Image (tube, rainbow, N blue to C red):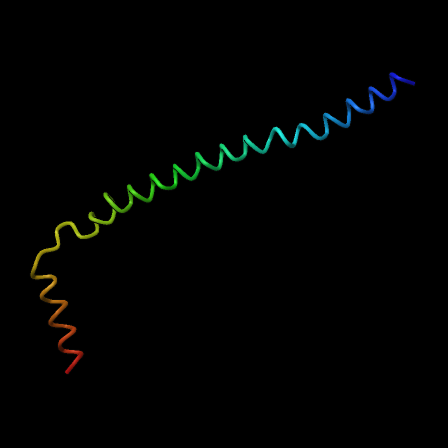
Length: 73
């Protein structure tokens, strides 16, 4: 009888502790993925977006201003 009780308690504790142990691991994984996302966004802002404007000169912007003025008339 005692063995049956201990077995039941042991199985019950196993069912409870396994999900509880996974919570900190999931939180750590989320933290790492968040840091990775932030690093990618910073890289995008610092490197990729300026590349979109690389090679553009004042003539290009003057053309845009002229087009906007033409539409305004």
